[in-house]
Image (cartoon, rainbow, N blue to C red; front, side, top):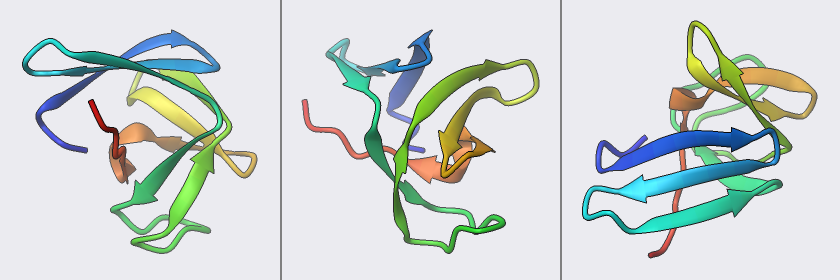
Length: 81
């Protein structure tokens, strides 16, 4: 996850992405992310779709991908402002 982006949970189908300069974009599910840490069932550098977003007490945010929950920081979001 790029340090220049801040993520804000809105709903399970909506994620607010804020750039350091204040520009914002809203992502609606399904949106695509890139795996940057290999995890069970997902190889590194694999593009996958996020089906839902969840607020999580330990990881802050989790993404539902292929029926499994993964911490958001395992992925990179590429957005254009």
